[in-house]
Image (cartoon, rainbow, N blue to C red; front, side):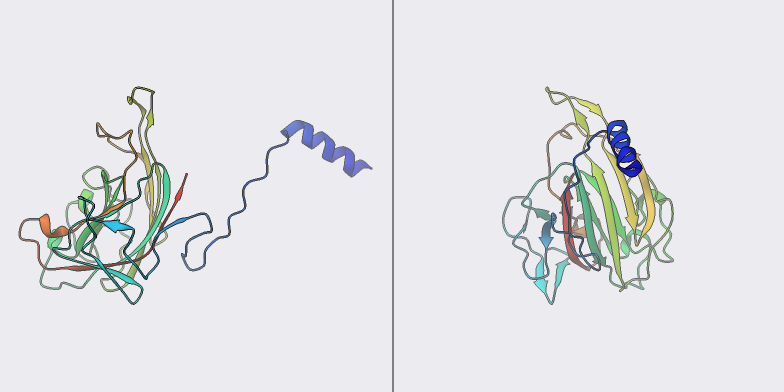
Length: 227
């Protein structure tokens, strides 16, 4: 009887909160049950060029291959706040250094770049290294693996707060784990004028960079959960 009494008192004190929704977690970084799967290893159908035509990236043996000249790869779907997971494979380019090594980027809403670069024993400007919010925040740590090893980004992105007229009332924020290591800790993102609108995920083709060498970036297991 005493236990029942304690339970009633606790219920009155803390309120009857609704039970959280059930989400079946994925295994080995796989997509949870409520995720939007953007690349499942078999098709690039959810990716397009900026003009809406089919992406120049190709799917083969569970991997999305994006070679120099394929063009930036955009998701056809747009999103606001999201939890994002992707895995990437940077080629070894021993004759290059700095930004000329394997180089790409994942753009949130097509606006904010989380840098992808071979930063293993490859110093460059800090806000342009792997794990950086490009041009804004250097990573808290260099958690890069050597090239030609699969690496992982887990990103929590909160879109900016906006009023009814589309004015920004609070900044977007970003948290990034690189290979399980915290490299961006709830940083406030410098905004753009169109930031109140949802946008796509974009994987950068580095061919627009002056003198960019031929590079084949590989991606797999890309998904997001709307927040």
